Length: 79
Image (cartoon, rainbow, N blue to C red; front, side):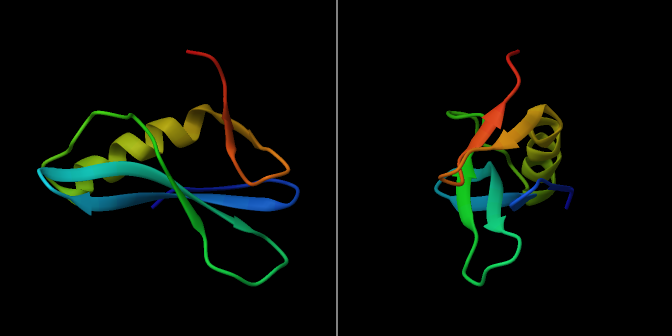
């Protein structure tokens, strides 16, 4: 699991199990507030055979993450 910290939020790699495999995701949580993280699927349409493969893919997307907006949504650098 990879992690990035921003001014108000932290983001970590995550995987979401589902039919046909795993989705890569980024989990976002407020730094100084309670509550559960919100999961944002990344690489839409791509399924991974193992959770490890999905986590590696999510780590690549975490590298592109440049900010978290005020609503807690990830902001990625253009590809």
